[in-house]
Length: 466
Image (spheres, rainbow, N blue to C red):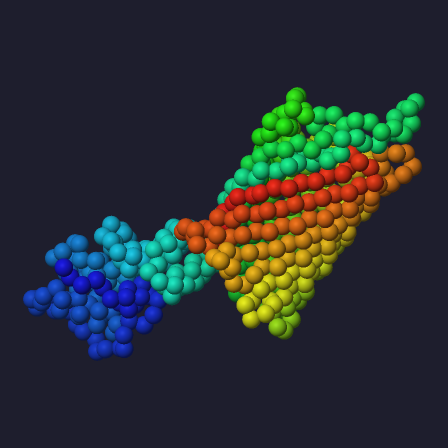
């Protein structure tokens, strides 16, 4: 059996490093009878000397002798790609994928297939082939090369898609109260404590969430300023537990399903220099609750960052939002928000720290829905895996001061604390995707018991490793 093509040759033909020192140009003489090994050497020499036309001629001769010659098909595809002979390049790449047996061969086949597709502008196919190369990479060095090329192709692809799905057992799928009673201001009876019935209490169950994000880049200039149009669709459905059905026999999981459809136009770039990235966005959308139209909304947002020395950055953001009620359970409203954030790399391991503070205010046609809020959050992503796990930690704290509470003439204050831990199972990487497990909890204390809430859940999902 002919020896497996050397790794340096795989790298070279795939265009990832120099083939060899430049040699003298070799002219193909179709009439010279040469053995397969001699033909292969001459083809490599011609390619290294910058003569892909001659290399292609020798490679075609080798393929004619033996169509299962992996080395020859590799040279054929690479040389044809350099010559923009797409018929030959695609044929060579397809043959390679069928012939590949070892990880080295599968890696080389996937890489050259990606290059052929990318050169023709088929970036989506190229990204798929690069994920295949990542999956079969013989070692970490080659994997890093494939990841680098994936990021390069993705950055130049005007289309991008993000599909996610998660399953999450949760203790409070309906945002109900954790208390059995609440305070109410009733006509003729005044302020009373009454028992909460049915779906007013927290109901446990399982959430099935899915989302689809599509992006198309309308324009990008030489300074990498980009204008994108984006479509985001998401839906969360629920299955109630037996305990929840006992509490609320008339309730169904579909009663609490929530969906969002949003179309956005975003422009991002840098102001002045690469140290001041910004983004502007305008969005139109609609929400559904319990399979019924709930609200329509318009949102305008802006964010400006300043990159400082030592891998530090400051982020300032602002936004306004208008909502139109499509359901009697809510009301027309207007809101604004201001945010400030700090980003920093910590330690030699490259841990990432994020701190955020947000102020928002909402006003509507219904005073009980109006509030002002403060939210503070901190997030740490560890720079190195722990026992093979990538770990992220987050904590949040916030207040909502409602203009009107359940008792006439009195407001309402809610205080919320939350925490979240996410683990990436890096050792289970498959085609550049890794499973994640998120443990999260949140507790709200209110002036009125019916608004006390508590939620604990586990979420299984997938995310791209790069």
